[in-house]
Every structure is written in structure tokens, then in C-alpha cells.
Image (cartoon, rainbow, N blue to C red):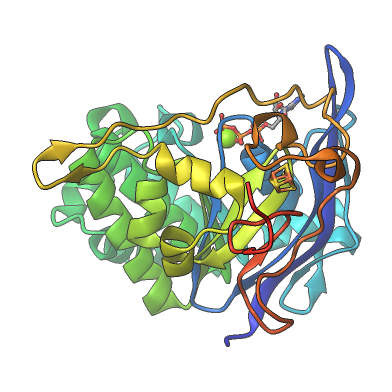
Amino acid sequence: MNRAVLSVRNLSVSVQTGLGLARVVDRLSFSLREGEVLGLVGESGCGKSITAAALMGLVPSPAGIVTADQIMLGDKNLVQLDEASLRRVRGSEISMIFQEPLTALDPVFSIGSQLSTVIRRHRGENRHQARRSSVEMLERVGMADAHRIMQSYPHQLSGGMRQRVMIAMAMACRPRVLIADEPTTALDVTTQAQVLEQLSELGQSFGTAILLITHDLGVVAQACDRALIMYCGRIVEEAPVEALFTAPTHPYTAGLLAAVPRISSAQVQRVQAIPGLVPHPAALPDGCHFADRCPRADSQCRTLTPQLQAVDGQKSIHRHACHHPLSSPSHAH
Ligand SMILES: Nc1ncnc2c1ncn2[C@@H]1O[C@H](COP(=O)(O)OP(=O)(O)OP(=O)(O)O)[C@@H](O)[C@H]1O
Ligand code: SF4
Ligand SMILES: [Mg+2]
């Protein structure tokens, strides 16, 4: 298996809510490996974006409290870096793109000017070189008329084009890690597929590992090698994508999959939504946070927190946090 480029141990984030302090990310541990696209998946509010912000060192303080044993990016522990060093790492070794690129692009500067500025700052190129590199990056993200795009302003581009510009900007410095937070959610399905394709191609050719945040299992199926399933701030299942879709072991993952509409032999299957509501982060139940919605829950689930462990033996890279996983034949329900 490839080496880890990003290795996270026990990352937690607490925020103040109307109902008191809430731990919205709870002891997250995972590795992102060289060359892979790792999905971070879960329903709205489960803590995906705030995890990304914590990894980038961008959780606003004192509103949010971040703790972690380590966030290793290569041989640097980001937890121990001061703000100035973190700023150097951001954009050059780890960078990020967001759902709505309009908020990240400045409306008063041309695309060429914004892209060149980023390239000059991080690569130390002169104005002329930076413009050439900008055109090259735009071409690499699939923009045939890169010279015209350079002269354009953000509002003159379509959503898909703006997202390509953001990818070009985020990837211009060939970062080790790219965090993409719902990068295609605002796009139509065809554009989404093209942008995802371009993203993974560029990741491959630049050797950039990608953490792809999404609530959409279709995006996971299309673009990811592995995925982490998150529920109420915790990872509940971690698996290669194929295993996740063919043999999910956590009841929550199974519930998510059952809620995806499928069209088979001209017949639309009825989808089964997971019953119940996600608990408020400041009022999480003891034990397994999914217990109130889980058909397999028992008293053990309501008292003991299930730990993430290998599904079948120590070496498996398929892991789950569940007392009565679906693979377990001994548990009859
Ligand atoms: N700056 C903040 N201050 C207070 N609470 C916050 C802040 N940012 C996020 N939260 C809370 O943390 C929890 C996780 O939010 P987060 O934005 O990470 O969810 P998400 O999984 O990205 O959801 P979505 O799919 O809707 O983007 C939510 O309960 C949210 O209300
Ligand atoms: S630990 Fe229990 S409640 Fe939680 S998902 Fe597993 S079976 Fe369901
Ligand atoms: Mg989010």
C-alpha cells in the first residue's frame, strides 16, 4: 500500500452552540495515501467541512477549539506549526477548494491576474513566467480557450468554468494534498462528471492526494478509491469504495446506500430513507450516536462507544465502529 502523505490522529473540534459546547468532530484518525482520492462522506452537519477547516488550520478561534495528537503532512506536524509557518504550508503543500468558487474569487480582478498572483507568490516566478504557467494550468484543467479566460472576470464564467479555475489555482503549486469540499455540488450532473474527471487526472499527474468531501455517494462511486463514512463527528466506516458499495458493514452506511435511488431494468426502485433525525451535536446520546435510528441497536449500543476496528482481522483496511455489524452472522435480528 502507498505511503501516507497526511496522517491524522485523534483530531477533535468543539464549537459553542445555542445548546452549549458541542464536540462536532470526535477523535478522527485516518491516513490519506499517496496518489489516492479519499472520500469523506456523510449527511449535512456531520462535521465534514469543519474537519477540513481544522486540517487547514482555519477554524476560527475562540469560536472553535481544535485538538489533535498529530496532523502529519509528510514529515511536518501541522499541530506544532505557528501561524506564519502554517501560512507557508497552505497553498503550497496543502490546498483547498470549496463548493462555491464565487466566494473564493475576487470579483474585481481578472482570472489571469488572480491565478498569476497565486503562482508568483508560491512559485517565485516573474510576471511573464507566471502568466505562461497560468495559461498552461487553465489548459490542463480542460479550458481550450485559456487566453480568453485569462482576460475574463469571475462573473463572466459559468459555474463549471469557475470551479476549473479554482482547481487550477489550488493545484498550481502541485500540493501534496488537496482538500476539495463539495467541489461539484453546485454543478449539473454532466459538468460534475467532467470536473471530477479533470480533478482526479490532475491529482494523478501531479502526485497530489485528494480528500474529497461530499454527501453524494454517486460522487464517491465515480471519483474515490476509498471512503470514510462520518456520522455525528465520528468515522463509522472506512473502506475501499468497492467494498463499501458491495458489502457495507455499518448499519448507517447500509442505510445511506438504501437511500440512493437506482434505476434498474427500466424500473425505479423505491428508496428507503433512514428513519429518525440526526441528534443535535450538543445533545448526543451515550454510546453509539446512531443508536436511536438503528434497527440493530441494543443496550450495549446505548452505553458503550463502538471503536473503529478492522472488519476481518488486524490487516484489513476495511474498518467499522459498530457492536453488531452487518457482516456479523452471530447477531440475529
Ligand atoms: N464556525 C462555527 N461555529 C459554530 N458551529 C459551527 C461552525 N462551523 C460548523 N459548526 C457546526 O459544526 C457542525 C458540523 O458542521 P459542518 O459544516 O462541518 O458540517 P458538514 O458535514 O460540512 O455539513 P454540510 O454537508 O451541510 O456542508 C454543525 O453542527 C455546525 O452547525
Ligand atoms: S453500534 Fe449498535 S446502534 Fe450503533 S450502528 Fe452498530 S448496531 Fe447500530
Ligand atoms: Mg460542509
